[in-house]
Length: 408
Image: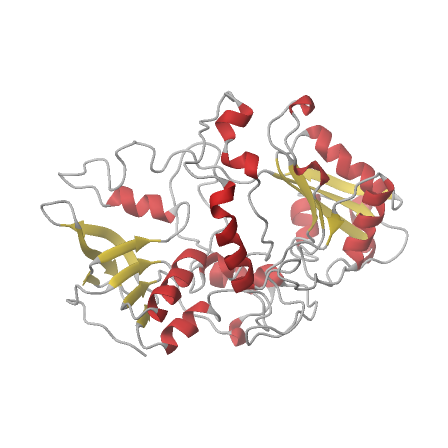
C-alpha cells in the first residue's frame, strides 16, 4: 500500500471516499497520479456488515449538527461516515436525471419558495458519461445486463399498477449484480441492502474502487481523518488541507490539487470553515450560495395488508419501480414528477417506526401480527396528497386494506 509524506505537495488530496471521491481516486491512480484520500469515518469489511440496528450506528454520520429550516438537528440527513460513504448504505437505485430536469427554471418557471436555475450543461452532454458509469457499476437493464428478479413485494405492486393501466413497471435500474460481475457475486435476495451488502453484490467504493486504487500503488487511504480546513497561498491557490486523526491530533497534508467530495452537507461545511482574509465568505463562495438550497427528496410511504403472505423483508429492497408518473405534467398542479418504488424500510422495526409511530392498542397489535402479509410502496420526488392516493389505489387493487400511510 502506498504511503505518502505529509510534506509531499505533488499529491492530489481527495476529501471523501464515497461515490465521487472513491471513484475519482481510482481513475487518477490508474493514470499514475499520486492520491491521498482522507475519509472521516472508519474502514469496515464485509465481515463487519450485519443487522440493520447495528449498521445504523456503525455507518451513519451521527456527529451533532446545528442547522436551520425544517432539518432535524439531531439527524438532518442519512449520510454516512465510513469508507465508501453513502455507497455502503444506498439502496442501489441508479436512475438518470431526465432531460427536462436539467432545465428546471426554463421548464417549471418561477416556483414560490424555491431558487431554481438551469444547469449549465444538458442531458445530451452527459449521456455518454451515464453510459460509462452504468457499465462501471453494472447497472441492471443497461448494457445487456439482466434486471433483478421480482420479490413478492414487487409482484403485488406490479399487479396493482398494471391493473390501473401503468406500463413502465419493472425491477429498476439497479447497481446490484443480477449475475456475477467485476469480481462480485450475484444478488442472493438477502433483503438488507440499505444496511450494507454483506456479500458485495451491490456496488460500493468500499470493496470496488478503493481496493482497486490501492492495488495500483498510487493511492493511500487514510480513514478516521476528518478534514477541518483547506489552506491556500497568497495568490489564492490551494496548498493542502488540515485534518484531525482518530486521536484528534491535527496534521497538514500538502497537495497540488484538493478535490472536495464529501457530500451535500459536509462539503459546504468544509468550504465555509475554510474562510480566510482573502475569502471571508468561505472558499468557492463568490455566489454566496454555498450551504444554501439544500433539497432532499420528498418521499411518502404506504403500507397495506394483503390476503396472503408477502414477506416483504425478503428480496432486494428497492427492486421495483413504476415510472409512468415521472414526467412533468403542469396540469397536476405541481412541477416535475414522481416515481413509485418498493422499499420495505428496515424490516420489522421499520413498521412501528414509520407506518404507525406511537401506535397502541388492539388494532395496532393486529397490524403488527400481520407483518408477513404487509407490502410497502414508496413515493419519491414531487409527492402530494393526490399522489399518495394513487399508491393507495394501486395497493387496494391487490389486497384487503391499508394498514397505515404516512407522508415522510
